[in-house]
Picture 1 (cartoon, rainbow, N blue to C red):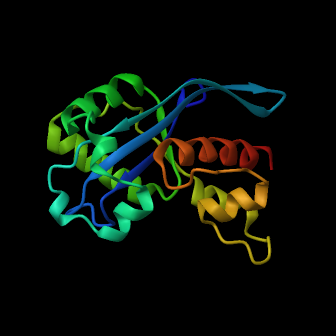
Picture 2 (picture 1 turned 90 degrees about the vertical axis):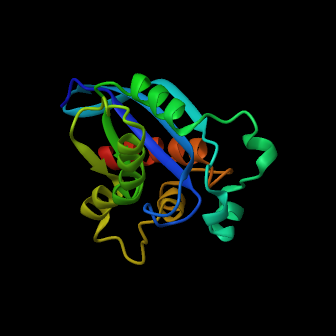
Picture 3 (picture 1 turned 135 degrees about the vertical axis):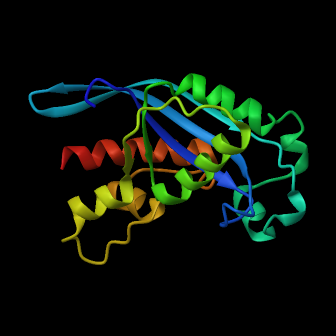
Length: 181
């Protein structure tokens, strides 16, 4: 696993239910990992955000759309889900999937791969930074494990929270801090 690149992934969706709602944006930071003197060093190789045109906007949760900043004008040139998953699969080939609240993002991504028939080209392990944060910081009093709380804890600025690429950039920084503990 140490030779594989890491794909830090965040999805923005039209709601919380992967059976009912859709991905409208995927953010990703790809990094190589190098071990030196027993410490992990990451080098960012790429970052991208893919906006996806929803096909069932009528089922969207209005609050989710507000939080994610969705508006039709900004999604006018968005990818179809199949185009998005094809592009994502190419860029993340053989990477290890890392996400904050992995069960949420993975459920939406797995559904999108299945729905489109695009093969998931990532390496099979997956890492959840909430679990990692709990394992490393469980003795920290009054710490919550949300992305926002961990950004505050580590002094990471995430000025455009709840957009896929901004949250992924923050996730990348949080992971680096957690791996130094």
